[in-house]
Length: 151
Image 1 (cartoon, helix red, strand yellow):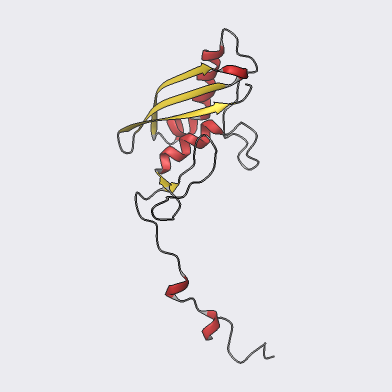
Image 2: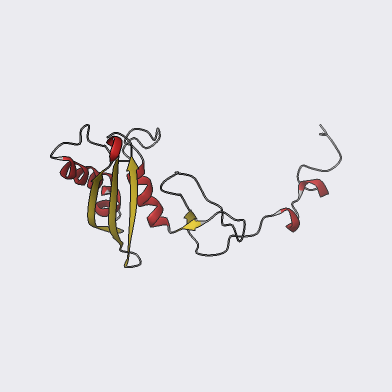
């Protein structure tokens, strides 16, 4: 039974892409899309107009400490569990929580080493968690911060 038209699907001139319609490949360091730690949004490079890039390991660390446990519906284990109060044990509770959130990168994949975890109490019940770590695939050190409302 013949279909609509005279050519099989995808073989006619309207079924093929042209090089003009394809976007240019990104320039700069190859990796994953850059996520702004403060806004959690992707950012565009103002010079090239393309989305910014970040190393894949850095993106994994950032996602692990900025995602609250249970908020990612497909990965219920991913993320950080914040303490309920900013009491005397706050720094210790944050360290345990961050190490648990990064366990898949430190113990399972063994691609990072956590060098330090600092939790700073802020005004209005906010906390700033800064994790310094070493990427074992490149031997470079890096740090990411997470601003958490009302732990």
